[in-house]
Amino acid sequence: MTHQVHAFEPPERFVAGTVGPPGERTFFLQARGGGRLVSVALEKVQVSLLAEKLEELLSEAQRRFGVDLPEAIPVTGDNDPLDTPVDEEFRVGTLGLAFDVDSATVVIEAIAAGETEVEVELGDAEDESDEDPDEPDDDLDRLRVRLTPEATREFIERARRVVNAGRPPCPLCGQPLDPAGHLCPRHNGYHR
Image 1 (spheres, rainbow, N blue to C red):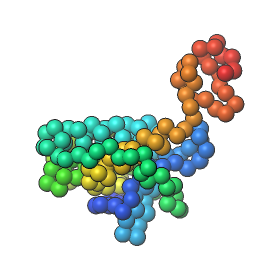
Image 2: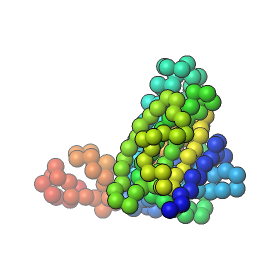
Image 3: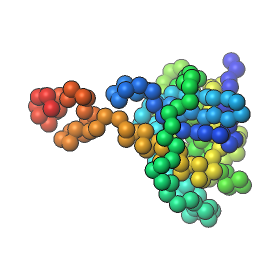
């Protein structure tokens, strides 16, 4: 079975975004460059973890290799919607992170979910070659993006805004509030 590697090194634009109303949103990673547009679907928790682990990776790269990190990106970053058409290439099962010391770039790889299960796995390596013997199923489609530390910071800030733009949490139980309220376990099942 043939697989595709959608490589953007570097992309013109790489963002996390959603389609649909809060509570029914579908999350996407979208890369654009060289006349190509690739969108892959993933879970909200994967976007949140990706932003968190990218922040950790940048901090570790600065500590270990002395990489100059940009200051915090202002909130006025890329707020544009996803480029259309948003056609799902595949659903992400595994996310991989690496820092390439030679080029001082962050490599993000989103690998399609296998046929049996979806994994939420984020790992980081400081100097990882393209040929990793522990790489999950070589016959799965993947999206590979190489970003500068500045572009990585911009991605992190946007991903956090996208994750936090959903339904507000219940102040008692933390579950998402629907516009009509929800059955709060802290109120013994009464509507809140």
